[in-house]
Amino acid sequence: MKPFLRFIFFSFSIITLVNCARTGRPEGGPKDEDAPLFVTSNPPYETINFDEKEIELEFNEFIKLRDLNKQLFVSPPLKNPLLVTPQGTASKTLTLKILDTLNKNTTYIINFGNAIEDNNESNKLESFKYVFSTGNFLDSLKTSGEIKDSYLDIRPKNTNVLLYKIDTSFTDSIIFKRKPNYITNTLDTSSFNLSNLKEGKYLMIALKESTNDYIFNPKQDQIGFSSDTIVLPRDSIIKKPLLLFKETQPYKFKRGKEITKGKIAFGYEGEATDLRVKIISKTPKDFKSISKFEIGKDTLNYWFTPVEADSLNFIVTNKKFIDTITVKLRKKKIDSLLLSSSIGRTFHFRDTLFIKGNNPLVKIDTNKITLTDKDTLAVSFSSFISKTENKIALIFKKKPQQTYSLKIMPSAIFDVFEQKNDTLKFNFITSEIEDYGRITMNIDNQSSQSLIIELLEGKNKDKLVERRFISNSKEIQFNLLEPKTYFVRAIIDKNKNKKWDTGNYLLKQQPEKIIYFSEDLEVRANYYLDGNVFTIKSTK
Image: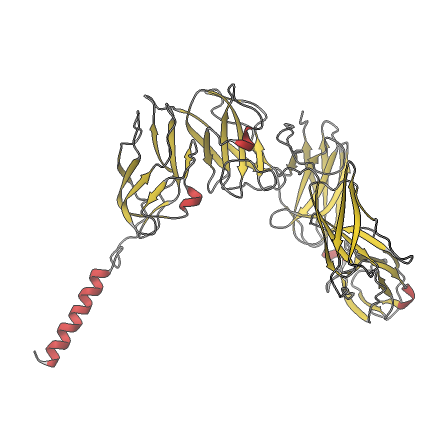
């Protein structure tokens, strides 16, 4: 064969091989937007008197499985998970091997969620399930409802909903020990649907689990429960949403650990009501100590004058509980004092100027601190040291469109270890009053309940701007607001302790109710948003 002909033959062979290897739609053809279809199964769908160990499911095109471990669940739950093949490769057939002994006279639902997709375009076969019964009929009752977060204004996804049959063996503690009779999952929504249920009375709970074992772990899981017994077929629709909450755990001391020289962290679980730490080791006359809770953590930090000892002994008390512990001392270095300002470039009128430290601040010499305006005129101020946090507040009358300069000379601030600051300088400006807005709310408290009214901002409505406490109907104003979107909520403070209280399953205590104002409040500069009425009806 001539070289030119050999080249043409070789090029044609390559093109042929490439075209044969292509999958999917031809160039220019319409995009496949159809989900795969379930064609048949062996045994057939909704088989009764089922006694097989293997199920084959056939589809009309090649399918693949995505997130099977998260999407697949079987109701009632199996002790050993189904063995599903193939995984990782495309196929028109799925094989399910049952590794458990099935219960008699029971309807089973194998729910794939949205795990099944076509191989080319990843179109999902949504909420696909295979149903069979080990008895001579299929249960057919249904119920549905909604899940809500009890604290945040969000609709939680991927939440398990469990039904426990109330019979002679039922106790409230069953959710800590045994898997439910029925289970479903909300998947990508906050709605749930339970199908193929038996007639009877049930306990319904929702679990937001760290591991899908369908057993309530109070330390890790969020729970929601229906206060009313679910009666089927009557309760085909659950009218009240299940409110997810995290239980406050009983107090339990964990341990004391030296963090740096002169600092010990005492860790605990649960509510640290009146938690105190007392040293019982012999200490020098000049020994001093300060303890403060760490914001956002279950930790009590304890700073103390360093001593020459291998260990220290403490008594840790929390009302009825007493723990005696020994903490070994091995660290060689004290944390150097670090100071920072709580204010950025712009000093907003609602802000307070704090000087924050990594160690407790115990002394301030205001003669070594100067605050001046843009004309370098001295600005008078007062100060106080926070008892709960490592910071000092500087209080002064702010003026609009002003420039301030704060200078802190050496040895103006001392920490618990007698460490002092170096020279610090901070500059910041204020805006015009017209750069801010205002919200006026008329709170229509129809039953004179104790309310906590909170102004919030942030993507998840989780950043507190201001809080008010009222017990009647009144007008409230939120002034000097930056141009942002704000949200208002009312907490029904049933026990009048001026904080939101979570629920408790065993005590059958729902979390305190939170009502969000229906509108987002868009504040613009020099804009008064008035006339909004927030009606709080009786919750009894």
